[in-house]
Length: 148
Image 1 (cartoon, rainbow, N blue to C red):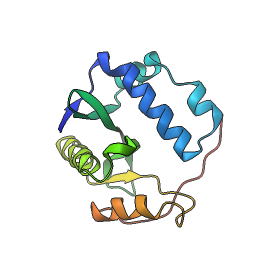
Image 2 (cartoon, helix red, strand yellow; image 1 turned 45 degrees about the vertical axis):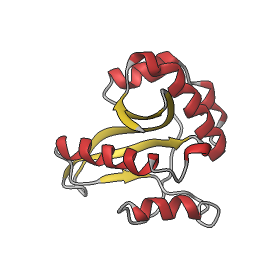
Image 3 (cartoon, rainbow, N blue to C red; image 1 turned 120 degrees about the vertical axis):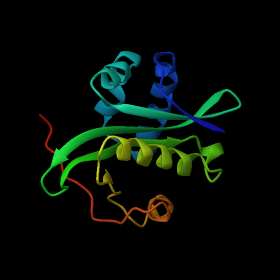
């Protein structure tokens, strides 16, 4: 398995993995409706960083990271917006390696922390919570939103 950066030729495969992720999470309908190769490429062009896990020439996972700033974070910090590993490849190290790539990217970008949104139903997502905790994250709660 290799971890590599996103290339524009990966856009359709990224869309498929994101559709699977959003469906699995029970995301709002608009999250899936907005998905397209041009939307993925637009996010990359605007600064979203994507790393991909590839096994046997097939993409099996991804992590997307955006940069932001906040006083509480001491300046620049990274946010994992999406993280997904195809179910057949879970527990095989792809997720850990994707997190390692995100950490390396954030450090190189001068960040002091990485945030990831926690699940709203902690009991339902215990395996996910355990994964992030095993990879150095601590649970600090989830987030609220307002649609504009």
